[in-house]
Length: 367
Image (cartoon, rainbow, N blue to C red):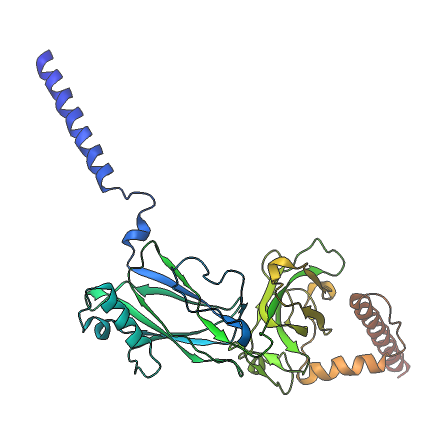
């Protein structure tokens, strides 16, 4: 009996060991996921150089910037990615020289590209990210052409790039640095960060506020990195839907990058819940080469709405009331917060209502 029990124990232990070995064999190895990924992210870092400072053509390794700290990030450049896999492999290039010839043929300006995948415009620090590109196409290693299809005025010297996947040592992400020739003075950009706070307590950070950016010419920045004139009320959704909108996060922070050097205004189009929209634009200046992470944040304040209710809309009868009240009660003191002004108006309204009610009560009693 003891021998039987012993055999049962050995058999059970052997089965358990086999299960554990199977589980370990099936478990993914940490750090190898990128090598077996079916997609890759390609990030283009667009740089512009002055005509007398254009560096020689060099090979991108998919990781580092081959131009070092030369050049300035350039926004507003649109790249279109094309799947050229079949055309590239149609000549069956086997040697390194043949591969280079095939790349040069497709990168040529007169090459007719088909099968566009997506188009992305550079923004922020001059980057355009093509995320999730398939590593294989038509059963072959994918080949992509990145062609510059639109650039700011005065910028020349487009550079098309051809990538043959996989790129050695680039697991999951490939960084490329195409260059352009700009005007005599390179277009330099920068950024600014902000923090949305309560007007009475700067430690109270506010989320959900929305803003647009206005330049010195009174034009507003669009989602396509263009500037356009807006007619009518800026808070109208029909006007803001095409504009680039910045929104404060839970910690009140938000930022803008990639603006050319100069003076701008931050215009609030939507206030945080329970607060009144600020009608005073916030001035800020972009310093070339200084991005949002390298500059001090500007506090943008909001005053609470009376009793936590939102302010009257600036449309219809409410808009007329908002403009009428300040004229009617123009003698009110102009000091203190907006909350105090509203409370004063409410007090006057209640007092007038009481006097009118008392007048009618006496009139009815007299009858």
